[in-house]
Length: 107
Image 1 (tube, one colour):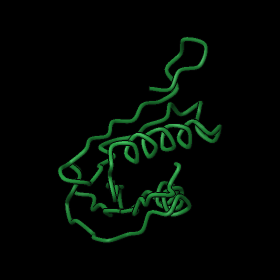
Image 2 (image 1 turned 90 degrees about the vertical axis):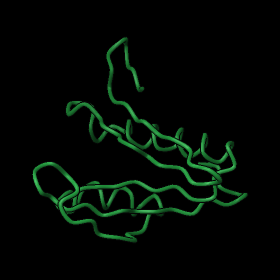
Image 3 (image 1 turned 45 degrees about the vertical axis):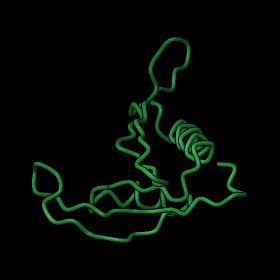
Image 4 (image 1 turned 45 degrees about the horizontal axis):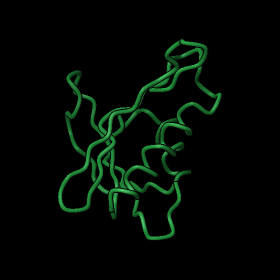
């Protein structure tokens, strides 16, 4: 969770799947905090945690129509690997995006 002056600015939930895969289950930044680096800080923390845990790759899902999120993740080295139809309850498809973590990955 990201906090600023006791106010929640965002949160991220991640998990480790044996033997060496990480999953960003969800990330959200409160609208008024978007564009201020909160998402970057949370993703940095999640990737550092994954690296310490011995994770070799990490993935997430993002809505097909959320191009801003796709650009953000692509800028961090995530690549689209699979499209999933009707992933969200409203019928929106999702992209699975994945990033390899290696021994020199610090974030």
